[in-house]
Length: 306
Image (tube, rainbow, N blue to C red; front, top):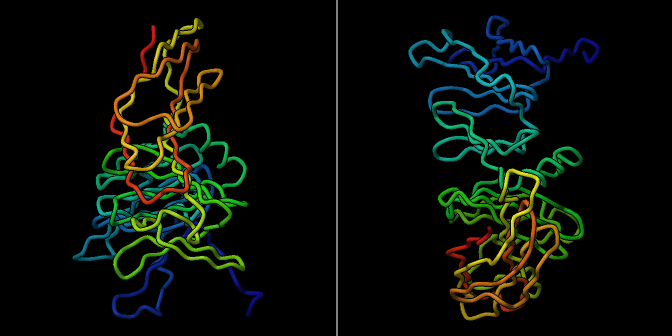
């Protein structure tokens, strides 16, 4: 009866071989985390089982010859996972969302933060609305999607796994809050409210939502420290090499205390004078034009300062 129901949020249980409906008490694995917390997700990594808890990451080694001869170790006692929607398996490891960073767990159980470029914005969201943050791996383009904002618009952080770079993608007037894949491994964005819009994340025939609204493409660096001292550096210019792809020129923002904005400015090799003074700088390149049926590229960005 319901009055006898017991919950064990820190237990992993497994059935007997060939009998998935039989789980004897001898097959209970208790995860003792000194910091407390509960299990939020379980994944496989090579021949091991990874158990994600709110305050730690555990590793269960399961020998194929005798699964009952398992061994347990807390691989990362100081790293926790936000929730199950923040865990995504990829071909050579697992991405997951912690309170402080996006973490990549490789096959040797090395945990590496990959989100320094978006650290401040990322931590602001995990501190306020962590439940909106969901992950999805685009197997076709080798990119990790992370939901950043679901409001009147939808924004994603996108991590290019091959290039190790971050960008932000904004979808106007739609609330994409779920992901899926079609039969050809194309990533599908799903709007689960009353409109129920569905579209491919990458559609080279039409980079627009619902056939009419352009997708805002934004590439933005993290804060790059120019000097470790209290004195400001003099930012002379920003050198870029871009390709507008036949559409309108890209927008440039140089953020260093104040913001220098150059709309419809970038195409080809250029050097843009900024004459700003600051200790840190960010560079943002974006495109929100309606002519989105072009492939646009950013191949180089560097900052001259003294």
